[in-house]
Image 1 (spheres, rainbow, N blue to C red):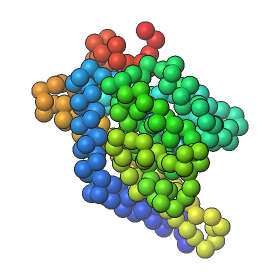
Image 2: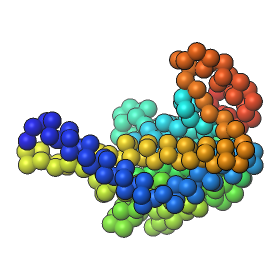
Image 3: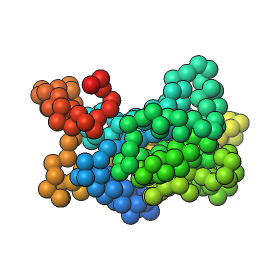
Image 4: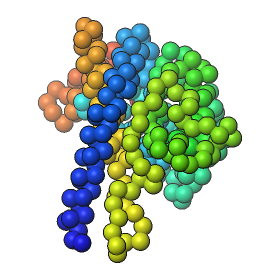
Length: 252
């Protein structure tokens, strides 16, 4: 099997998953966008969290060209992508009880805010407790996860529950267990993970829909422009000043 054929198969698999999420999760995406718009309109703040590779789609909607300026990354030291050595430490930290509570207690998150928790499996202690503790604080939680894991694996949290069990709204990424879309006779393990592609697109779809919802209400959504186009830096500077009380990704 040629490498080009495998590349094409990966694109086909990713496109198929994107189409499924678009069609099957349309209602949940619309509801998530409305929740973001409600929060922005009410003066609330927006946060997003993901651990390990699930941090990538979380970071993709924070402080970026074409993005909503009010989305903040809720960072947990050691689990945001591969920011620790050895990289396996990040995976271990996802299973530590109590870490989520400590992070929330020292964060600016408060009642009335929205937190999007992204976790492919939704089975580790950190995303489960992040959702549980956030809701206890009066924060509305959107979970982005693969429901297949909850159906076919066991939770690693003491409660036996998954992320999906502690959310106001859940969006299913449709990713199958193992996050590997391809197999080949001469390659021992499945390969071709698509969760980042799909979840990043899903998050961008929610943000785009939220912007449209705000505009439909007569509210100009605070969207960032590229700093690499003329006038973009000044545009963004004005937004950061105007909404500075709801933006936490810069020194104040």
